[in-house]
Length: 246
Image 1 (cartoon, helix red, strand yellow):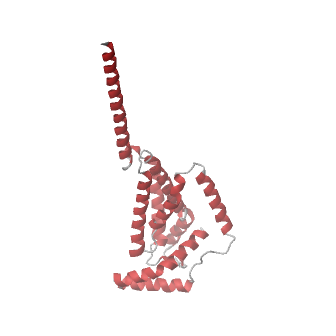
Image 2 (tube, helix red, strand yellow):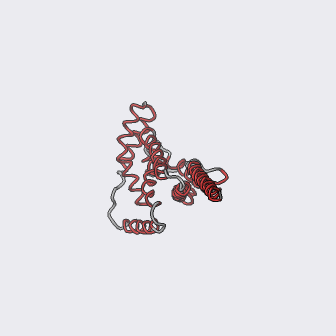
Image 3 (cartoon, rainbow, N blue to C red):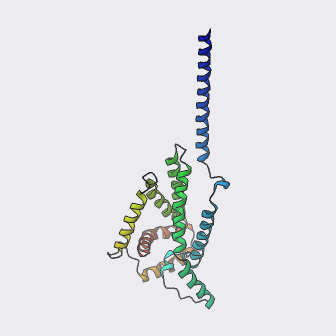
């Protein structure tokens, strides 16, 4: 009789352990599923959001003053600054105090956000697929904007940068520091080497700006898109030259 009772107790314990394991597994799957969604507002890091907003405001201010042109090459032509003294003062403040700093800060926060997403998805078995899907969607939006709207798009380049740094998130923690130091050394050395790409001539950019103003101002989509498409190779050379100088 006691043997039967012992076996019944063992059977009950086994059932309880099985139920506990299933409960833990279900909770783990639930946590993994919830981690794949957006971060709850209460879990967001307010300081990062504030700094991101400041950086985005700086980027917008610089873009309004310099980048938002019919042709991106107008940014690289000498500006006469025919406005009032206040216009010239504000322009100088933007160029000295905000230009490039806001872009660098926003780029840094893009990398921070990607690392946070990586940690947030640590419980999900689909972490790599989700990160790749988000970057691919960002590249799709940037590609549409680049091809159909404006050749000064930046989202496409952010997506490329995300795909480049994504493998480093899965490596040892010291790997990004080593690669970053090596790239910094390459950047410093490259300033003493012949340029990989050079800016188009001033006469070419002046002609392109005039044509862009004429076509975008009076032409339809059937005329605007072919013109924008022919400007893409020169835009890429322009961006490569700018990155090297910066």
